[in-house]
Image (cartoon, rainbow, N blue to C red):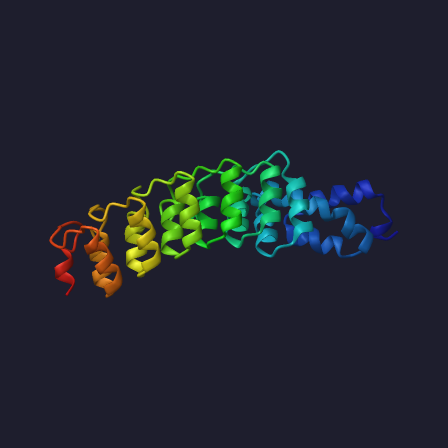
Amino acid sequence: MSLLSLPYELLLLIAEHLESETNILAFGKANRRLYHQLNSLLYHYNVQHSGGSALLRATQHRQETAVQKALRAEVNARGIYHHQALARASYDGNQAFVRLLLENGADINTQIGVFGNALQAAAWRGREITVRFLLEKGANVNAHGGYFGNALQAASWGCHKETVELLLHSGADINAEGGEYSNALQAASCAGHVAIVEVLLENGADANALRGEYGSALYRASEGGYKAVVELLLDDGADVNAHGGLHGDALSTS
């Protein structure tokens, strides 16, 4: 009597007692019919023993069928990978996956990893359509966390003008502190993004805000050798002698 001639219920019981996804997969590959029957078990096993990592993996590879199967498997579990998958889909601008994940319980404002949250991930890449969709669905435009601190700083560093304007129109705090570059104006100045610096100054960014290791936007621009940005900041009243941070004033960069 061959193994595959055993009743399905017994085969399933055997599979449930295997010690890894690799073993379950190998067992399922013994027969095509058995593989399809054990496929859902693989996803449930992944949720129970790996926190649902299959969902993030499927999202990264844009495998919609696999995403749907993973979501069905974790219907009562909303782990770390569930929220990472939303951030990843937002970063990629994958509108279909973003919608699907939100419909299946992903928290739009969960703070996690380098992305910070889904809105910051989308803003970082300038995914304007996704940013707009997330805002419409209740994303907090001023949520803090992640590498850039907030979505506006991420969009400013990435030089995504339309996204910056959308975030400002949606109530983003232009002088909010936090993240790697302290505020949006410093982020744009550090990267030498003239157009973004102009938009931020026109909308009330404080050219003399002293924050973080480098102190000011003027210091950031001076250190980077971005003459056009330096001129914009000076025209807006930036104090060339202002001290802040760990490196002195802007003149010390020359």
